[in-house]
Length: 183
Length: 149
Image 1 (cartoon, chains in turn red, green):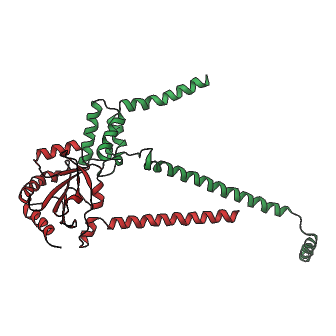
Image 2 (image 1 turned 180 degrees about the vertical axis):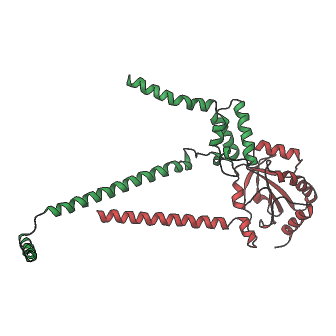
Image 3 (image 1 turned 120 degrees about the vertical axis):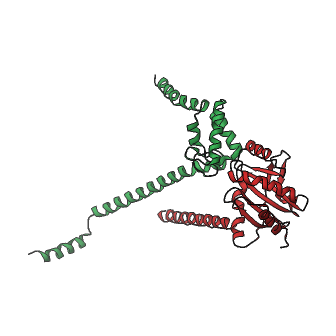
């Protein structure tokens, strides 16, 4: 009987250790699969898809539905100071690139819905913006701070990233041209 | 008499909880909610989003909202991760159950080990009390006698 108890205890201990090792392996794999981590290694990772509520009340926006166009994906929040400086530049960029197979999408993260709507109205933003209050996209993209902008090509692969605010029109255009360039 | 005393104790414990639910203070809510960016409780954070959440909490308290209503409104915006204590339902229940299960398992293991140890000890002492085989005892006496002066 004692031998059986010992065997069960040993099997349990081995199973627990194996489960913990599995968890560690999974976590390490997940960390390495973030868009930012893969971009830093010189790759062009697939942009993680999402379906999120639009802040203009026009239903949901599915990132996958924008395949065939280059996407400027800007992560921001109304409480973020540099986002206030960057937004007018993005709006001007949207006006310049609209109708040229380029779509701008703002992702409002960890923010109050009402504050985000006020922010968009204050800066006269007309490109689509989605609400991600829980920050479900942050980990998958590997967003390190706000604002942060990812440039996705027509095939849905991330080609370039700007951490921090986009400084000027030339920097924004260079990112878009990378997304438009053939793979 | 005993029932009345128990009822009084229950009432004394329940009254502050009910008051806290109906008229929460900003300080207690800030210690029970987490800043979604820095992941510390609001009372220890000065991140811009935390400051905005603190202002929101004060507005809602002034409007007469209960603690549950304020928490629910913040969970609706930021998700359940904004709660310092995970909810006692669904997947988050694991956070409550697992430590208790671990403790119970530990108690069982320690109990089993103690039981086994005490039984081994009593078996050993029982063996020590048993009389020696007469032949072996005679031989032992002979051996000991050789060392006597």
